[in-house]
Length: 538
Image (tube, rainbow, N blue to C red; front, side, top):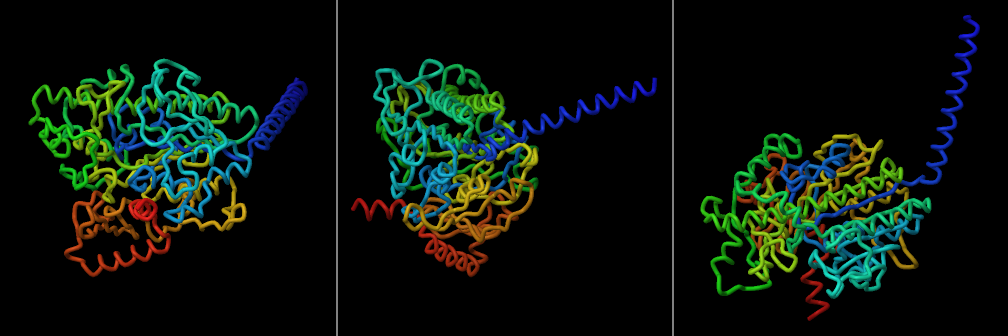
């Protein structure tokens, strides 16, 4: 009897060994086919640091929350505080000298990746082929230039280009009516990444969603999901987000919530003056208590934020579609997914057609500063600014088996670091020349050591903000301007939300920081959009 049991045991042992070897061989074959990881880079637009559930928001973002909880979040990550400089810096790894750049997508394509772009095409004008960047730098692209509505009808003039050729709205293949831009970008992205997987080719998918840039428009069912949830007003909701952020661990436990303040921007760009209602226009920039509004004003303002939330909710739903497709294709575990925003929430008056409510398909409305302040919790100010409300972004990276799940890091990152990160992930060396032309060396450093749970050597400094709103960070110290005014000095280790300007008590140190900033600007030939326009369009 014992001999029979031993024989049976040995048979099963052999069976399991053979099965294991078969699985191992199959897995090895798969790894040989997909030896390089897929990469997905997703960018929100004009969204604040706290606008995701996993960064404190009441907005439902379960798919981004999943990526965050299975990956890593940064407490301190910088963009360039404005749409086109952020995108240009992110996709080249440079602060300036873009004429000598090579987009990361081209290097990935040359290394065997299929490169795909679906979304907003908005690069600084000195980038080669800036207005057709999608077609010039990617194998497949569905793009539009700068800012457009979200709803389209078949008879509308199309702003969309597929692989550089304008395509009529009625000729586009979409999954549901009416045509809504966020959904359509995802339709094409899934179609093209599926083709890549079926061809056994790794892919780089760049998804610069336009969410939640003006005009704020959303599907009615997405607006309805949030209607009434913002009647508490911005002050109470800002405090609630701040408390949730501390529980999530995405801000330091001892940091303070910045106080309410008016929009500190002299320009206050606007599309329409609405001279018949100057009080409404003036209130657009100003902080007011929720209780000071009439019931009618509260209802109108509550709708505005419900539309904004619905836009973000819809984007998250579409990110969920991409995650589900990766799972169904067996590629989720072999894909690095990064999500961030191009700048903080904006507070500029781009309101047109004020007779139409926010969210309407024909409306052209933007967010009041008080709601944008909620988005940028716990920081001060907005898009354009070198204060953290303008130049800070939520940042999520997900890569099963490579990034420890549930990680939160205090290490500092910047969009200039993304190109070197993607190149290291893909095993690609950055060239000193490209197709016979000299290439500017990378200004950023790879984030891969941080993503894997270790430490990287801290970069010497970071720059962000627009001209006259610049910031310069070196170590835990930061200087910044507002409207070209005197440079302010902040100790970020002890003042995360920039409440205490130390320039008056440490003027010599501030002046040394200013000299360091000027040296850094000269070193990288920092792109200045106003100087470019002056010299190229006198």
